[in-house]
Image (tube, rainbow, N blue to C red; front, side, top):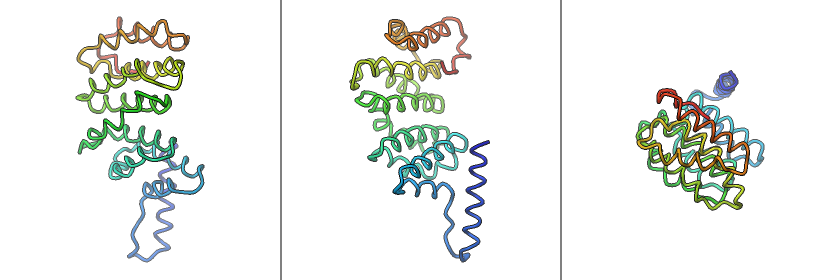
Length: 222
């Protein structure tokens, strides 16, 4: 509902702008307006535009796919928040990636999991779930990448304990697609001794579901 209202408002603004210009003037799409706003001087404007793009990518990935390359350039930017949002936005486009552009970005996409920034790693791990579900042929590669959290070099050991949470959640979404789930079940078992209670609870829930659910039910998040 929010995204649809946002789209309606952007389209109306676009029509008003078009009415004020000669017919020969190029029409700027709502997505292009949001991408342009990412270069604004005010941080609040940038972040608002970035969040709207991510919301659009969830609801209408086909609208953003023509701008895939421009979004991919944000992965190398200096603004951490824009990079993290771009990562999740691009992952949402996996379902419409008919040209397999995302496949060629995977090395850049996955390297943050190894550290040192835990938040960046968590966004990459979350994105792995979206990619695996949209592109099942990449499920094993995504699962292996998520498992890199075990040896990741974050700023503190505590960060690695926290990162286990999104890792288990991501694996829980697509474990039914991997060829050999054992290494990931073993990883979850190890988290039963995680110092953080929330992580232990998440691991226990994952393992309980793995032992009782049928494969067809294993696509839900933990």
